[in-house]
Length: 443
Image (tube, rainbow, N blue to C red):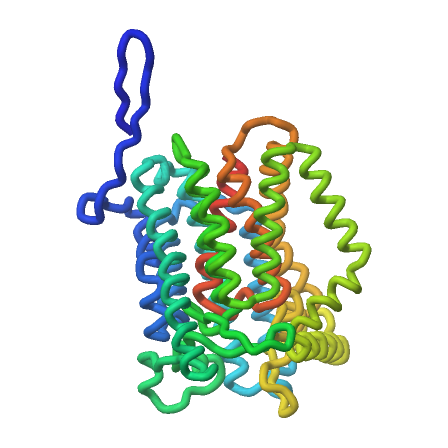
């Protein structure tokens, strides 16, 4: 920040952000900056399930002082990991899962640790002052915005290819694709899906899967990048709210290109929630809560409408949830069965497509309780602080922070309909978002 003074007034002039050659990230932030800058390239190589856990360990080591204090978040992490490890050791894994499923459970444990390391480190960014420099936050924000713009531009070009080819899926092999067919989740990383066909409301449409093995995960990553961008903007000395708020419709457009129903609804709802609360304070918040209550009152009709948008996918999910609950209640309701087993009747393992259901299958009622609290308790507490502050006119936070906090709806949507600990990029960026949100709310 460059300031000029005269005897009559003080004028603040914002210095332009430095170029890449001039700017050097603080040591504690470099793993995060590398994760953002190389995000598309890591996906194309197919090595994200190795890259992001490794980067999370480096991030945690660079911010190791964050782990000197043990609080409720840490205890929940230890309790969840202990429960899942105990279940894996004691539950009938041999009867219900193969070696592939045991390796899958080990991958889930590694990604829970990835989320934990990133959340703790990101919160420490704020406490240690690593983000106090406006040039640092500006540079990170610019890198996040470029990823979203790249997604929009490349996806639009690939849509043209999809239409010209008559609706054929577009994909490319990764580095792992040079190897023979790999088992389990590793096979998903042997090709990078660019655009795939889907049927929404009975119409064949293209959906972009850039940056992630599946379109739903791509939508989640786009939402988390927008949330992180807005939170970073909110901690600047002089945030440019017009630019920050302009990012939201850009992000809504990008997420819509994935055709992910949950994420599309979540980012639109987040936008409306923040706008109403920002302008109307408590009246706006109460208005939104009244609408949520009305939707909840007609939950069956709302759910049926969403299910009809893609009936095949919805019926498969519901059937999967029912089978998962029945299996756990029959075999081990307290600590689960350790793995998500495969059956001949299904293409995906039992316990998939929902984080609470996944924790229930692998860790029983104990694992589901610890998992839900670990991932959602910090978010709920932080969002309540930020939104109530705005609703009461306390002016503790800046407007971009309110918009960033509203993106917790996208996190919640993904948590409910997908496995938060199945994809390394989701664990990494989701952890950074939760850590920044918690740190901002407590600052």
